[in-house]
Length: 210
Image (cartoon, rainbow, N blue to C red):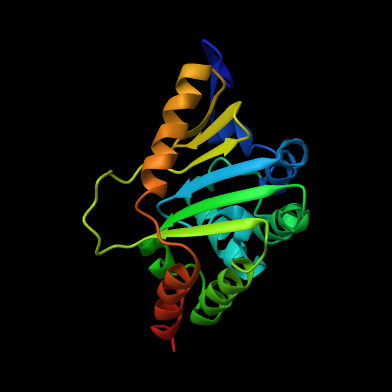
């Protein structure tokens, strides 16, 4: 398959092409996109979103990526890439931006790294949840679902959707397709809890580590 194969106004880029220079350039390649975006809407069913990852958790995630893609990577730069990910995530402190982040409750229990790294990550979620620019929603596991879990996707303002597949990243810019993801986001959002209820679910997961 070719890199950035067009499909209308969408592109499909295999991870093996995106990581051929290492993981750190991939992290840095998103800096401009982050700087240009004012409203971030992110849904994740598997991991803490990158914007809220601590360095220890990010390093564990990226080490797992190295393990999966080791034949396609020129070297292991997961530690450097984790630092780059945390650095680019400083945009969450910029008041002109807004972040609406949705995770499945199971994300709070998928342990990446050792127990301390996971505890630090959950502690950071509690801190980040208090930032005025962030709305962190958690979809409770025990709640009857009106909508199925979806693949991880990011919506940047109203013009770009990035979907993460096992083999590739798909970027979508066609308005009707972007609208479908915005609708899916709102449907998932309708099942999430925020504020004190989300905090209670995070604390429950944190207590389970101690």
